[in-house]
Structures are given as C-alpha cells and as structure tokens.
Image 1 (tube, rainbow, N blue to C red):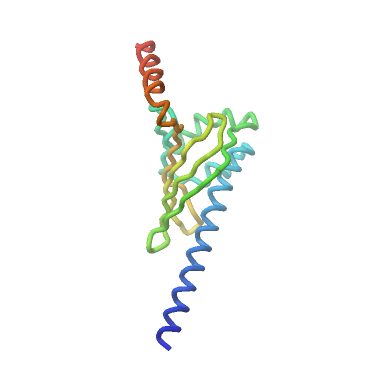
Image 2: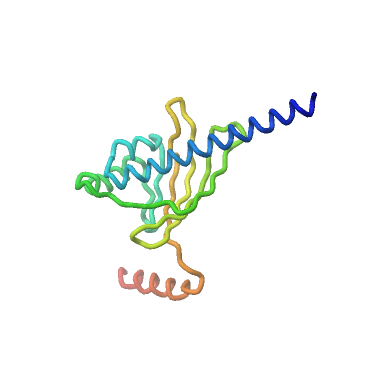
Length: 156
C-alpha cells in the first residue's frame, strides 16, 4: 500500500511539474507574441516593476522603465520585433515560485539566445530578468573579435 501511495504522489508531482512547464511556455510565448503584435501593455505588463532587460549591445542594461522608453517608438509604430522560440529549457525551483530558462530564438539577427528568470506572483508569472545575446559560431569568433575591436577603435 505504501508503494502505491508513493507511486501516486510521484505521478501527481510529475503531472503538476509538466503543467507548470506548459504554463511557463505559454507565458513566454505570449510575451514574445506581444512584441510581434506591438502590444506594449501585454509585453511590459509581463515584466515585474524591478525587472532588468539586457540587450545585445554592451550598453543595454535597462530597467523596465528605461526599456519601455527605448522600445516605445517601435511599439507605437505597430511593429516592434519578431522573435520566434526554436528551443527552450525550463527549470523550476523546488517551491515552484521561480523559473530560470534559456531559449534559442530565430530573429532578424540570426539565431539568438535568450535567458531569463521568472517569479510567480499573486497575479501570475512576472519576468525579473531577461538577457538577449547574439550567438557567434566558434569557428567565426576570431573574426568577430576583430570586427568588434575595429569598431571600438573607430569610436574613440
């Protein structure tokens, strides 16, 4: 009987975890969709008040309000950006209140990687931090470094 009870608890925990993964996937997918549809209310509403967005440029570490100021003209034109998730890896904290994830994205910049931290609040999931990076194939890294170094020297 104890084994049956343990099996039931194990299976129910598995389905609860699978359900949370689906919920998190939907949340992140809807966040990306909001940018595609230039829906600033949904996009920025998914971010906590203290959230940080780290962009592809070294200077891009924005608070939610700084990022909103930067992105508002794009959203106002009805066209922000269209990032399509191609692969996502999700991890839940033991208590189910935090998620950290990474994802590959198809973008106008090529393949990018996004990673983030979500926090479950009384009103639902909120993005605490999101980090977008451009991926560079290892075989091209020396050329990439040279390109960035030359750019930096020209700016001085």
